[in-house]
Length: 178
Image 1 (cartoon, rainbow, N blue to C red):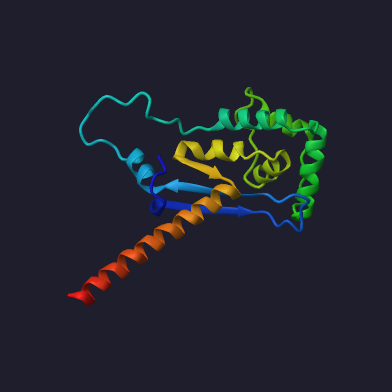
Image 2: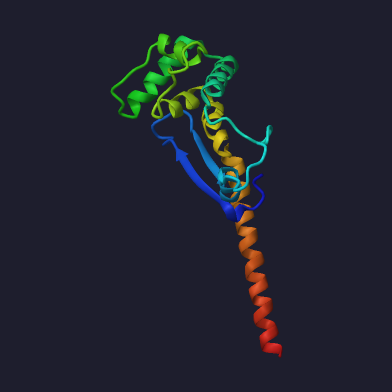
């Protein structure tokens, strides 16, 4: 789906490593053309495509990704809550969460209880798992890339720029030869 880097829109998030023990960074990418083509409505009535449509409600998948992250960490839920509150305090947040709140974020029976946008990056940082953020972006045709993929993207953009410059130089050389 993400074939042409020229059409990517990149949003980044970076946590200051001086304030945290571990560095947390990720970038979000959108493919403009794919996003536009998915959002356009057909002018003629036709049957809906069963396998192409995406549900726009990511609640279940966000909760599932939080459970996966909690399952893959070596920390207990109490330790996760303590780490989150510690990180929140370092960031200047005056709020704290409890283990009950964390448990509610994972229950499918409570679909209206999800981490707020200010708690989601902190949770992902503690769990070292960006799945919940990616689950939030998937309905829009977006995804999350890490630092390694970001370097590859920067290399690809530099390579495209180099090819454009070579093509421009070749065209200028042909003008001089003629």
